[in-house]
Picture (tube, rainbow, N blue to C red):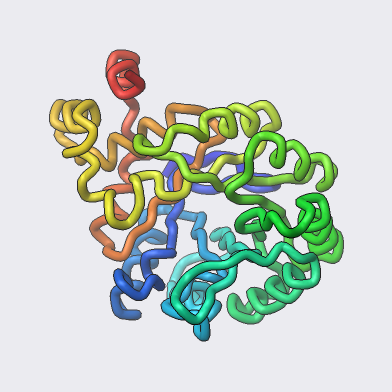
Length: 286
């Protein structure tokens, strides 16, 4: 597996997004989820993305984190070589929806809860999940800095941030911003400016929903003719072409496709070795 830099370390150039394993309407049973995580790890994936809010319901916060921890504990490989990235600042509400809480006190509380769910003394990569308009961004990132300084987290990242917020976080963290996780896919290309800022700063960019999201990933080839055409010519899936296209965008890009089946993981991982030609890239960028 090819690797790319992320903060103080390097990780596989394709990560695993664990969210689909804990979303009520799509989630598989625990045994299948663990097989999926093990398949990713066995294939060389060393980055797993989770969040405290990835749960079937508001009273099961930490579900996905606990699942990832259980899968790692039962895996026979080198667990120390795997970076688990989690997030805090998004909350779940009783009706199944999502809310925001960017208060520094809440971020500290969420981090402590994630430490317990993951069963670790320090979180490898802790990311602020989404800006809360009711709380000054500087205050929220200040709490992230304090967690970093206190050794509760080894690296700090942000998610769903615009270019100005990325630079603000970079400055407040004293240049220690490790990653930015934003939506990016053929269906959502408006994060191009954020990719450019990350490349300029040397910060990893982690596209979430890199295949278009849980409900759309399977239709990627049908909705984007260029990706289907390149895939047919190469004898691979449109999804594999999509991830290879994202990897070609910048050396700081590390896609984290979600998966709930081992087969999906293995197809995604194979994108790390798919090098697209200039002609293919021109077609996909058109």
